[in-house]
Amino acid sequence: MSKRQRIGRVAWYVAVILISLVTVMPLIWTLSTSLKPAAEILGGYLSLIPQSPTIANYVAVFTESPFARYLLNSFVLAIAGTATNLFFGSLGGYALAKLHFTGRKAVFGVFLGSMMIPGIVTMIPSFIVLRYFPLAGGNDLFGQGGVGFINSYWAIILPGAAGALAVFFMKQFFESLPDEMGEAARIDGAGEFRIFVQIYLPQVAAGLAILGIMTFQAGWNSFLWPLIVLNTPEMLTVQVGLASFIGDHTTNFGPLMAGTIVSSLPVLVIFAFAQRYIVQGVSFTSSK
Image 1 (cartoon, rainbow, N blue to C red):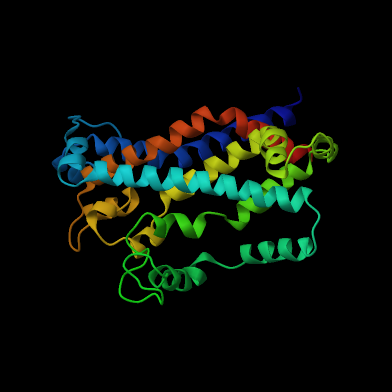
Image 2: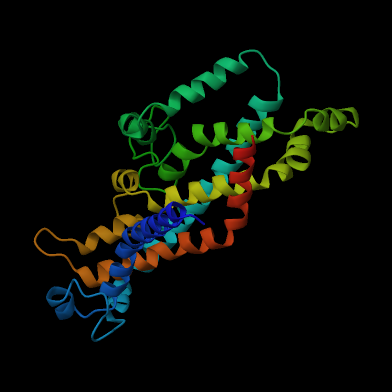
């Protein structure tokens, strides 16, 4: 190995270590702060090793607020959002990739165009539709008299039940599969939905895993939309609930950091178990 190559390798390792430290350091600081008593947090906030480790902050998270309820709400919404997004996204992707119908390219163009619109632009129209939805939440046939889907799980689930990104993402996977598989099944008398479920869907497990992880993470970490449509403590999600530890003049850093660690665990666990599918999906997209 030449001197120039050795210098390049050393520089590469130094860069990787620095990037790793910058990436991991906030998590380490958060974990360290969650194990410190209040006095130590204020007096030694730069120290990464707690002098008097304690789990009092983790106890306070669940005793000073309905944090268990926040976790349950987030689990329900994230899992329901993931399930609906996977199902309808796969259906839409399959239809655009394998079914030939008039206006298919136009429909796909609309989906692509909708991905260019920032989510903040559609928040007010989405809120109005959910608020005045007929026969929901005490509303009459004209959408008056009640609150519609506001302050319910449906206010979170319905707007993201079939995301444009999910349809586009799954379309790319279905297009990589041969059309002959479906044609053979049709000759044998299989219906279109059966072909979708039994023939094509098992072949795109890697894509479903990646989309599921992205959808779950987005739903779990969502803050602004739940803050807008959920307005009672028993309906709040974990990300909105963490904001309750931040007051106008003071911040309860110990429980806040402890709650942050607890709320990060589900995504980390899911990512750890789904690494194999992520690698398969990356390999598929790179080879394509």
